[in-house]
Length: 254
Image 1: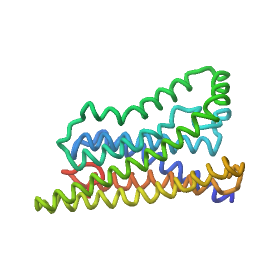
Image 2: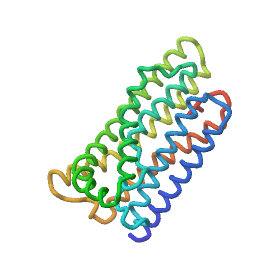
Image 3: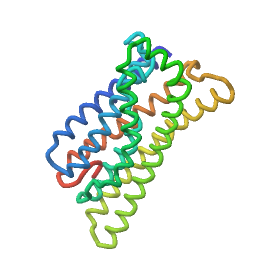
Image 4: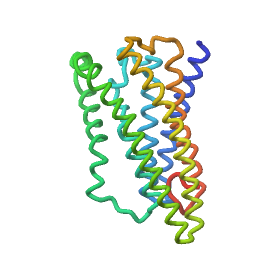
């Protein structure tokens, strides 16, 4: 079990650093679809910070910072929208961000302000807010919304890809079809990792709420969720590397 623990810690470090480094590369990358690259870079940045947060939680290197909400690194409600816009801008490079798109930013902005507000409070106030609000109310609600929104935006991304494939086939644009197919592979495998991660999260919720069993006290249970969380990010990093080999298409393209 000790070996498995260190392997998971190493995986969290690897995925976090890979995501953060690739996000910097994408921000500076001069080719491709700029908005797709920026959206994807922000996705890797927030995901990388999330993995770093889990790393600190598992290792408790920061002492009294015993939970992810004690650090300004947990921005999970941004994952879904950023993935969606990385796909959308990649498929439709001429698309312009509109006022109606602002609705997708409401939850990420609210979460960001909530996290930053909590972090800036004195330590004694943080613990009071943690015991009275975050642990019993905000935490479960935020985590549920995170899983639901990630599923919804992944499905929306997949539907946009199917639409683009059908549209490109009608127009006889074979290169666009191939790029969209490669994009579909990316989203398909990402959805598999996300589904497995959600599966462990749902099991934990059901066990705790209905059977009063905290599975995080069961040796090895957290490993599975951490592996899937890291796998999602590492897969996105791998597909970003594929992007850098293409000079005309946007994020996740072949």
